[in-house]
Every structure is written in C-alpha cells, then in structure tokens.
Length: 131
Image (cartoon, rainbow, N blue to C red):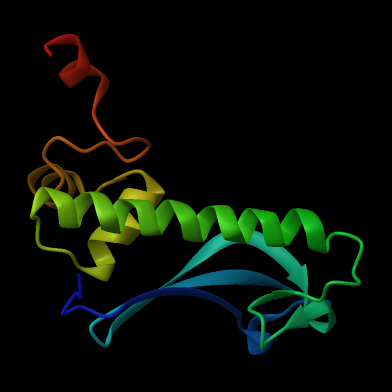
C-alpha cells in the first residue's frame, strides 16, 4: 500500500551554536515538505559528528550509546506517526513534536488531535480499564 505523504526523521547539529566544541543534537521531522527542528538536550562534540549518517562517528567511544539513543528517538516519533495514521488523525510535524515531548503546554492541540493515544504508548491506560 502506498501513502501520499512523505515522512522522515533525521538528526543534525548546529556548529555555530557550539560552546567549547560541544553542541546540542537536533531532531528534524519532515512531513510533506513541512519541517520542524527541536533540541533533544543531548550534547555531542562537533568533531565527532558524522553529517552523512546523522549521528556520531562509529569509532568514537560514546557512539554506541548516542546512536542507540537517536535510533530510539526516531523509532518513537515514527511510532507516533503510525498511530495517528491508523487513527485517521491529521498529522503535522508540530503534533509529532508535541507527542514526543509529552504534550507540555500544548494541552488543547495535543488532547484534541490525539484522542485515544498517549504520548508514551499506543492506548491510554484508562481506555484499557474500560475495555
């Protein structure tokens, strides 16, 4: 089955915002040419970043943990995208960001568009109790 939407998640850094050679990793969610970047609060050395892979260079000692974390982030965002597709909800990069970050102060947008979905699982716990 083909989809009419293009969707992707990748990671980048901003070298110009580096302090003492260390910078934040940013997640980028792209959906139908609409894009949003947000900081993951995960810091890396600029010299260890591999732009082509969107992660740390493999030979760096902390690469295994950092790259595993980035894959987990990508998997989580992709899972939210799939949940919203199955639920027939309108999907935007901003909504996926809100779901990943846990909703925060976006209350109404998050609650209205993710009815029945939780930010950390497929179904809210309360829904399971009534099933």
